[in-house]
Length: 137
Image (tube, rainbow, N blue to C red):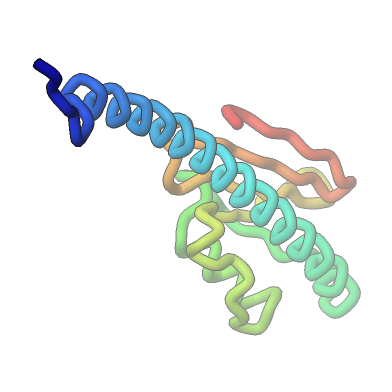
C-alpha cells in the first residue's frame, strides 16, 4: 500500500517557524544598533553646529551662550539653545533622541548631549577646543 503526502508535516512547519523567529530576532537587534549609531552621529553633528553658532555668538556679543544645567540636559535647555543660537530653528529635532545643554567651562564652554531614550543614558560632551568625551555609549 502506497501513501502519498501532499503537504508538509507539522514538525517541518515548526522548524521553519523557529528558524524565521531566530533570523528576525537577530535582525531586530542589528537594526536597533544601527538606529542607535545613527542617532549618536546626528547628535554629534548638531553639537558641531552649536559650536559654530557659539563662534558667531562670541563675535556678535563678546561672550558665549551658556546655561545652568544642574539636572542635566532637558527639553527646556535644548529649546533655549535653538531659540538663542539658531533663531528658533529646529536643529535639535526630537528624532535625534538627545537633549542638549551648554555649560560654562573656564573661559569657554562645554556642550553636553544626553540620550533621552536609552536606559544607560549615553552622554556625549564637546568642549570649546573640539575634544569629544563619550560615557556609557
